[in-house]
Length: 310
Ligand code: NAD
Image (cartoon, rainbow, N blue to C red; front, top):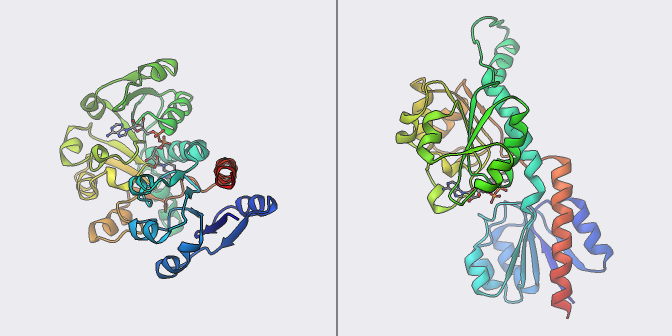
């Protein structure tokens, strides 16, 4: 009989559906690494979110392990290459949170353009800063989307409704999808030089790590707005802090950081910066996204478990 271990908090739908199908599930959200190493040899399937690190040692101890399932998108917490080399399937539900992340991105853009979080904080602190922080409209501005995959494309569709001109850059050929959405495809430097708002939606490939640093900030328009809901490592945090302090960047809205929660002194300074809006990696944290992810994952898991039972 197939045994499934769940090591992070997941939507009840996953647990209930699999149990109703008679599948043996042990739900141990928050299990320590030490305990995980002790119990993993018993299981055929492990289900995780972002907390559990499925590293080489976990995979090596999981002698029966056949499937690693990530209830979510990013696979950065799983040693995918090593798992695949051991013949273990790695599954996730990347399409489940696209709309939620795209909506957060649009919210961030409007908040940053009008410094909504800063004005809110000042009023709550007893100030009435009317006239102190004039914002900008997004209408007619150029939005540069870096990484034109699922989320990048959905952001483009939504931003069209705000009357923005949209340019996009990706490492793969995106001309087809871009022309369908009325988006101009440009090279990286053209995007960096011409955007009023830059929104990053790349997957964390080696080429994406620190792709936005001092050199890129220097090339940007004065008063640019930076939005990052992808992965923190894409931006050199120190360079962003400098660009904010120099006035090059008017505002930044970030759902992700290089270290989550922030650890280095410059990261702590960045999140406290008055022109930075920061949320604790909540892109996929909506009821709808979690349910969609759960449904997609359960379907994929049932297929895999059926194969294991054959
Ligand atoms: P996707 O795979 O559909 O799209 C990513 C795109 O980035 C691809 O088209 C790829 O070719 C492109 N890309 C990769 N490296 C690049 C580079 N160096 N330069 C330009 N383009 C590059 O992924 P998605 O579902 O759209 O997700 C986008 C990002 O959002 C990922 O990093 C994902 O982990 C992140 N994400 C965050 C949250 C959150 O909670 N904030 C939730 C879901 C996804």
